[in-house]
Amino acid sequence: MTDAGAWATISAGRNKGQGKCRAVPPPAVAKPLMMQTVTVTNDPVRLSFLRALLRDAGIECLVFDEFASLMDGSIGAVPRRLVVADADAARARLVLAEAGEG
Image (cartoon, rainbow, N blue to C red):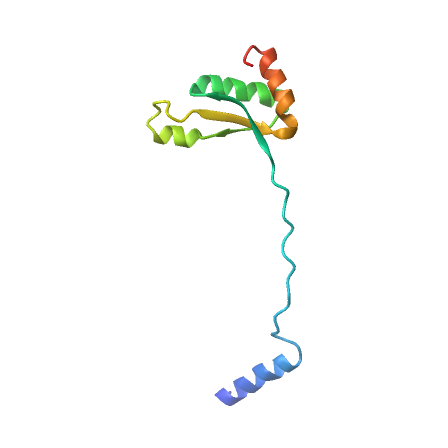
């Protein structure tokens, strides 16, 4: 096929509606999850214990600043934060208080 034939095929396809751009709706955006800090500590053993308490109670938790504290040489300049979802914050504080960690 010559160059002219290739162009004819492409333009013929465009005339039939092929190759046109179609608007695609944006993906659904999830509502951001709001978090609350329930405790701040530099002690990795205590942090592990608190995470286990919350997990046993069925409360999802995350540790913020875990790697930042490692980058400072673990001198304690950046404490680690244990955070939970807003909806679980009151129950998480109650679980920690019952364990004597509140």
